[in-house]
Length: 391
Image 1 (tube, rainbow, N blue to C red):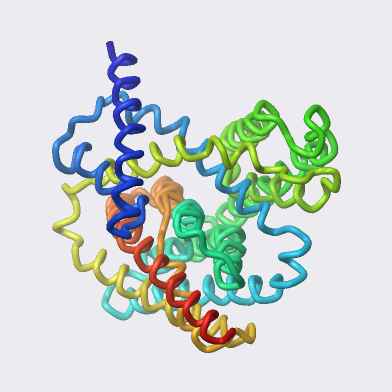
Image 2: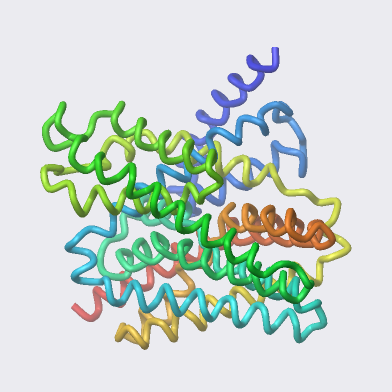
């Protein structure tokens, strides 16, 4: 009976997703935002109509969906993009992460939070949302340097974010008299292991895929790579997002015989993404929000300011026009489930701070997933207008 309920729920959500996509195009609202609101409406926060076993299924399709997105974003780091925009992407992404961690950590500490939790939340703030950003760009059909920069930045932003968060874990452990070496080794293992695994899968895949159907991997090949990356990364405790990015970037840079190496993934990713966004809305826990509302509000305000400031500084350092520099941070506001994953890791290390960390991570992720795609859409529209005027 439970399996039947889950299948019926998935069927209804797929059909609802089609309707919301149509509505979003009419009212110019990102479908990501509508899907998150749908999840909150149907899930525990409001009506609680989704089957309880539906949440358990999220352990399968969430990593799968995000790995697909990681593949596609890794594919944007192709030779032509890197040659034309690699310097800009690297400078802006590193600046954004550094400014986010510094501003959020310092701001939360200044308003009275303990240093350890301020540092950990600063580490969380570096996380972005490749899925939402990619989906808004696809939905709007945006092209040009600004859209390419956003895709390139989110493709590697979480890699720097994981490194920054690993450093935050180390600092928090030292502040709480825990073994800093253990924290450092954990972060190095997660990031280094993901890179090694992505290369281990991507190198042979670059030469073996696209042979049965010349120039283009088949659907079975594409799915096989996605499941290998997400499954092995989860098994070994590595970042499946970073694994997928490295694998995708390896294939697109080494597979000279490929014409469209990620075409099949583009065709099948949306059903997984739809379920992922709905579950993001359904995962909001409201019980602990009232007691730490000030902390959530402060975190959201500081992260928004840090995004705007980091994007502007990074854009100016990279030599972007003033308009694009001002809009870069605005286009990178969404915050994904990666932040929740980071909070879970930190909660295991620091049980005394678990409740506050998870509540802030979940509430802020929902907030930025609802507001962020709107802001990304606005940034893309304004950047397109600025490019048109300059031409």
